[in-house]
Amino acid sequence: MVFPGGDGEATTFRSILKPNLPDVQSFMQRGGKYLGICMGAYWADAYYFNLLKGTRAVQYIKRPGADIRSSYGTTAPVVWRGQEHRMYFYDGPTFLGGQFDAVATYANGDPMAIIQGSVGLVGCHLESQANWYTKKYMQPQWHERKHHHMLSQFVADYLLNSRQMHLF
Image 1 (tube, one colour):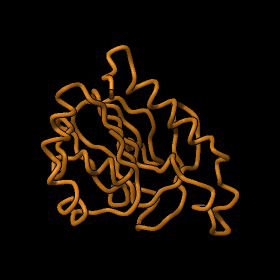
Image 2 (spheres, rainbow, N blue to C red):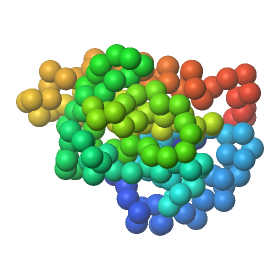
Image 3 (tube, one colour):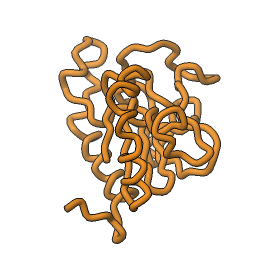
């Protein structure tokens, strides 16, 4: 199950997704996998789908030492598997508490991408497209689809395995 980033907040969740909460939880209990990007990562939190064990998805911009302090489209410096990148960011989450594997961190050291069991969460937008980088200062930071490959590898390495649930 994939919930990418984009428009969304509590009202959207209550009106569209909450009625399907039992289906999502049933899917996960039967061995399903969940990939949440930005808003989709927030939706894994206890306030929404409640898929995390002891971990909270919280606003990165409100964290101590956060290098981005307001909600707008920009790029954030991230360390992904030991390599530095600038990734598209629009008020994405970080993850606190509980046990998980951190795949990437923000500039202040907070987790940006995590795996907790069958749940994979990413705060930045690895799915971003070239037209997201229209601001002059952001144009040189377009990743030439490298982040798409990183996202694909994240899914392959951490969410797909020999116990993968068949979809059909």
